[in-house]
Image 1 (tube, rainbow, N blue to C red):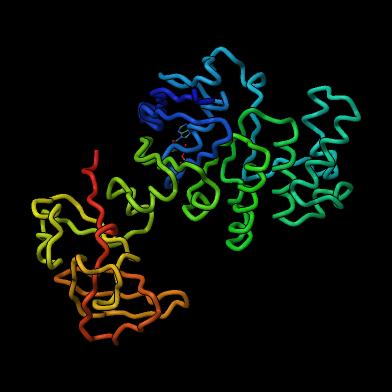
Image 2 (cartoon, rainbow, N blue to C red):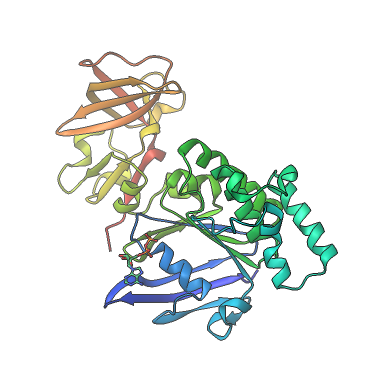
Length: 346
Ligand code: ADP
């Protein structure tokens, strides 16, 4: 299937500093892509280029096979949703949702039906007459989503839409946004710096760093096999062994065959460890021995910090059997799948 959107080597600089640097990727119809990266990595600029609010210095966007440079922004039929709701405070909920439909000169009947459908889609059936300033932050974001979806955009662009909400609401709405977009088969590009949000919303995650695309993969692959140390660090992984400084054999017995000559950086995912002798599948798993320096019961797991050589390694262990106490030595079996050889930084 040909992609709906093709981004082809797009670059943009400000004052000779590249902010978006040669980015290429493709998006299928109905796919939700999250642009994920730290603040300043170029996410918003890329979104604005896509919307036509900025011009690229080079490269192009093909949408449905057409070069977007030939289509003015208002004719692209893209929807947008931003962090600041940009709702009309003096209009009520239904009027806000209706706004784009009036501009497109839909008939009054069709407008009415669509507004009702959008209200029920975002769970605000009874709130059509409410004023915007009588709504909570979460309700406003639902109205903003309903308003951006009402005209059936061919692509929805969302820029940190949940950025102003507290953590709990943010997590709940992220999941809801995904179900709503999926139920309507909306194709979307969603900008966030929050990895939990990206995991909750995305079919595909594109990790940006300093204007470059570091990795684009499914959420599972991004988590299981981050490509570079930068991606791993951004995801919050802390067990990064520099094998040019430490030979892997200093850590593991027996040494997994692939690691014999490895001299790059090695990630050990924290959930890949089991207390030795407890794992069912661990016959061939490499073992690691260290002294427990921290042990924290976190409900679903024990968070363990272990000193091995001059490094502190962190693991998330199942709560049964409970690990030994701080100061004691522990032997861990490490799932080879949780050992990830990282690529050199570009
Ligand atoms: P993100 O959305 O990932 O936080 P942005 O795309 O907003 O990143 O910004 C990337 C970089 O580009 C930042 O360093 C920002 O200061 C710079 N930048 C963005 N817009 C402009 C502009 N209009 N003029 C100059 N610099 C800009």
